[in-house]
Image 1 (cartoon, rainbow, N blue to C red):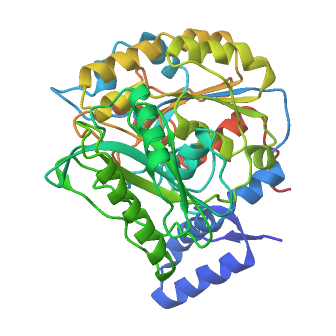
Image 2 (cartoon, rainbow, N blue to C red; image 1 turned 180 degrees about the vertical axis):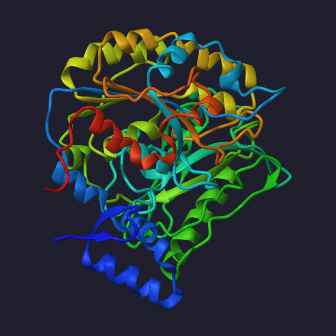
Length: 448
């Protein structure tokens, strides 16, 4: 049973015995003033609470529906005084923001630049510090690669190597057809390394998945990727003693690929990151009693969706096909995640104009979302990708939540600065799922 703590009437927080013991120990050690203890109680509760346990106990099955629209890499930084979102003409998003709860969401913590995996996990209600997923497993599952307990997978890029410098991490974004031929060529030429079988699976443009199959492999490896152009090659390094052999196998593989592709003008090297094995993670059905689905056209996002128990729906490569897939399947699911990649790609390319146009293109589909009449509609991002930086950044994501229970604030435009003034304030993205479930009336009351 919880004990009701009353201090100076600032906060009344139910707190468990173990949490109370921690608080009292801290008070005694640092002689904290009485007026601060209720704040301390609150912080301890927040830091020690188990959202997954609470979700399992409180979630209920209802007919209400939730749509989560993720405009990847949406947040930006000013160029000539405006961010991409501020420069874009977004009448539909602006009207929606004006009748929604708005705020800014930090994917992990303030100041932390997240990868797409942990950033999405947060939005789905999973603690990214608990579930440390390598990008490789997400990409592999999204590409339909079968991964067993003895397999190690990584996400790969074909790249351009000159004088031991990686001058283009994406090999000029080679066509997917060229990628397929390269993977086929390598699969027929590569030798097994110390009994480990190696297979490449082509993705879009320069991307691929590599699978190492055999006993004793470890995913405790650093990325074999400098993350920036015009940098020297970086080998994979073992992060534990047990991973030393695996690191050598990976680096021997990279050397062999470079030798095999030495005559290729663009794609003559590979970069690997996100080494991972198959993790154990509860499904959204188990935690939230949802029947969830995902509409995405990049393997990594499909893989993440599959990992948390979503059905991955068939959709084409452009926005009309994504939203047509949503409309076609809407009646069959109570939670649908829709992922738009173009905003992020333009940001990574440093193309302010293209990112602005991708935002405007997405804005045109908001009326179609509203026409479906979901009980909850959220529009946000997984992380920010300012074109000024050409990479993911630590800046928080604009966030809006529309429902009949929204407490409308003074936000009149869906932009970074406007959302900072919203009712929700600045919060961790892991709270997005409890908010969505609550607004969809899918959570029971907590406590007596």
